[in-house]
Image (cartoon, rainbow, N blue to C red; front, side, top):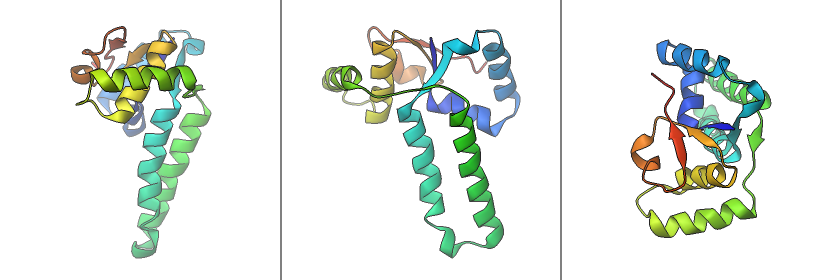
Length: 142
């Protein structure tokens, strides 16, 4: 199984050359082998909900744009399996937290899910993730 990290999901949302490269590589695998994590959903929706909380101070056009992006995020996550954060992942996170203090909690939660699912994490964040033992990572953005 391949798990899309938040930055690869963001790349797909934004489009452009990098997204086309990633899309072509994703098209070459069985779609049933592709998923993301509830942590990436958390990160993405938290950002757009934060923007939505500013709506009263924004112009109508800006309000519409924020809701369109929030809706696009919802549709994207509705179209891909989302792997949850279960007790096994939470325990793996605790283990990783002790070993990797400088890596952010959300990244470690994603790593914990990938490890417990025996999945390959697709990410641009090789700098942090390659330091984690037993985590398989690849960057498909180039």
